[in-house]
Length: 184
Image 1 (cartoon, rainbow, N blue to C red):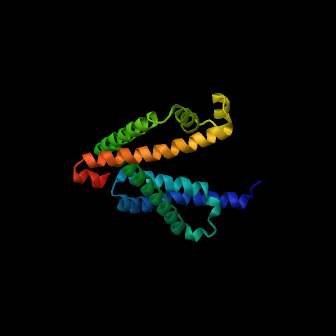
Image 2: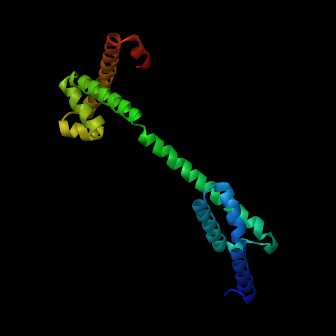
Image 3: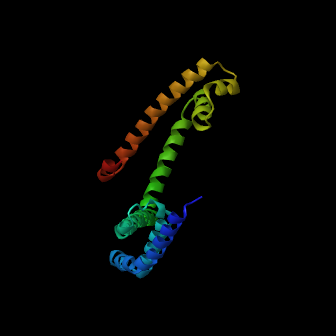
């Protein structure tokens, strides 16, 4: 049970929060330059202050305590707004998305072409292990071959893919204008 003195003290503090609302609002408007945002900031500040009223040790320090809470709320709001702006600007940059999508499609096409050039055994193991996520043991069981064979085929397939993709990239770069080669 909460002692009567504490309840009485908290009641006085809570009523003094209302008295300080105008001060908080004036500063919030100066910070935000927007009355609606300032209203929200003051409301957030008062809600947090009421929740944490028991943490205020010195009642004469209530003003500095409230403004410290409001400063923290303002920084939180600023971070939230900045993150939303960064995410929004990134999502709206259609030229970046188109370039990235085209580049991604080109890479996928090259990898598919290189995989198709692998011998059947290497293609099977590669598709099971690297594309479908099966373990070497599972791939061996599916293909009815020893695990050592899976191991050697996957190793050869990856090495061959590396070489094929390097060859395809060099061939592609040789056929492109000089400015494109620098980017690629």
